[in-house]
Length: 466
Image (cartoon, rainbow, N blue to C red; front, side):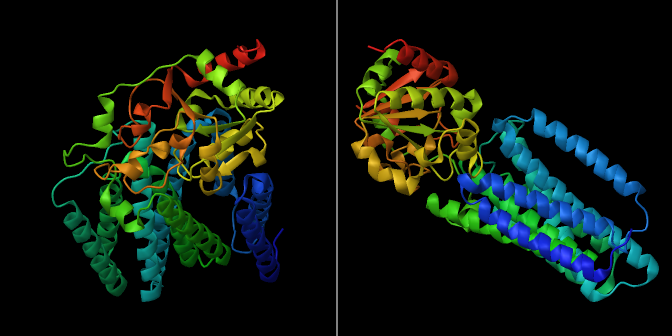
């Protein structure tokens, strides 16, 4: 069954509207489920409209691709833990980038054989290959860092920026040459240099900037998809690519603002590097040592509290402690204790990571507050319970000018009357920066697995506490 060009255009228009509504829904946890359903509906309509278009001559390879993709996607959805979601997203970005490269090369070969190449098309092909290749190799590096296959620390060397600039300029010049001549040699060199550039751009990025990089790569994948849309003459792919590209870029800007950093600084600077060796506030405080506490100590404070604020971080995701936290929330509320969750914009390894985990545990949305909303409440909280967070509550970001995270807005956990910090060890956060909060007089550390510790709190609360 074939559909007319007008019918396909109407279907694409409906899909585009659904994608826009999906993005709108994804801006808040309460409407995120609806946003996902709208996006799925839009994609289903787009796929069907494409499959039944007049351009499709055979379904053999298409069905193979659909079945293979469906099987892989189903297996990944069933097996991948939420802690691994950031690296899964990075891997999926790499697929989009490589798809753009392969489509551009295939289009070139077809049109070169038919003798229908023109400068405009070759310009589109160059753009698709450059953006796609950078997205692919950059995403592979991000995946390797997040998965722990390589160190998350910045990898820097002398002349790094000059090398990146030289590769970028050479790639652009080759793109111009390819547009003028259609040279296969130029096309191959553009592809190889773009792969290298993606690698050299991302390898110096440190762990604390990784959420921003994931968002940036999401934007790149959108532009790669848009470039592919121009190559194939598919209007919906152009629209969807532009939506993803702009939304990813806006999110990256918002996250950089939340970290008091610029996009240029993130992409070309690297983060979490060593300081100049000057005495730091953390070093001075570390001489005082830290105070350790037990589960019973924390329960004693929390049962008598009027307000408890819980700060979740990546450690909570690793331990899968969100469901136990839901029980703590319910047991404390039975004692008329107000409990709220504080979310930093870059907590975890990707935007919205903590929100999704808390929603998975059915923690009410009105208990989950963003940084700007919750920060004024820390001075009035009796207890702040930090569960696996680190950099996002580090007072060194405000008080220690020698710290690499100096200037980054943080959650004001230090202003609470009492802070209990759940930690496996004294290791620093993903940025590699020690936490000044560990050494403050109002902070006690509870060492151990976060899930085991929280479950111990649940048991103590059910047993009546003190």
